[in-house]
Image (cartoon, rainbow, N blue to C red; front, side, top):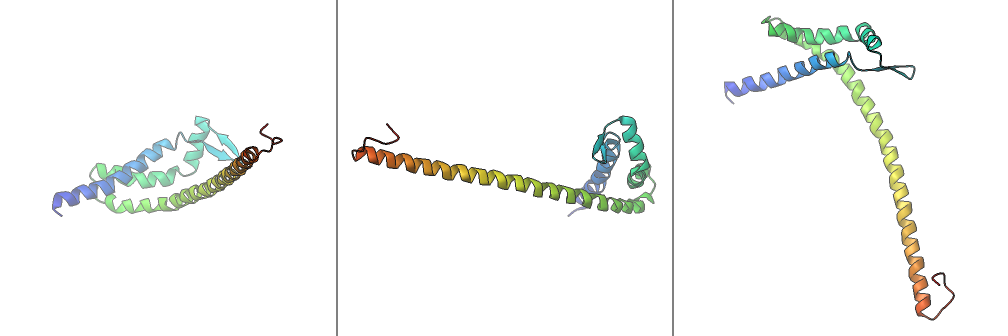
Length: 145
């Protein structure tokens, strides 16, 4: 691996996450939030909720990246602050996995309904087949007539 390839990999793995954190910081000013089951979507409420809550943590994560743009070499050491995002990321992953468990229940329900419909259809086909056999054997009083 030559020096240019290492530089490109470093650029990818250091710049891309920082850019994502910066975009997330901006998008959090527009993301609604729930309080006691009620969704708040007012821009003013969202702004103050975010500023009072996790804005400082997000800013400390993004600030070293911004400082590195201006050539401050100590900013590279401050990038370790990004590890504070791991806790929130793990919470989001846990919420997603709980969501998958909920959808798994719905999927299982649809599979059960499909199985019941398939078995019912198979039984109806057998019932129809036996009625046809009765007609072929000379019975005149079947449900087909």
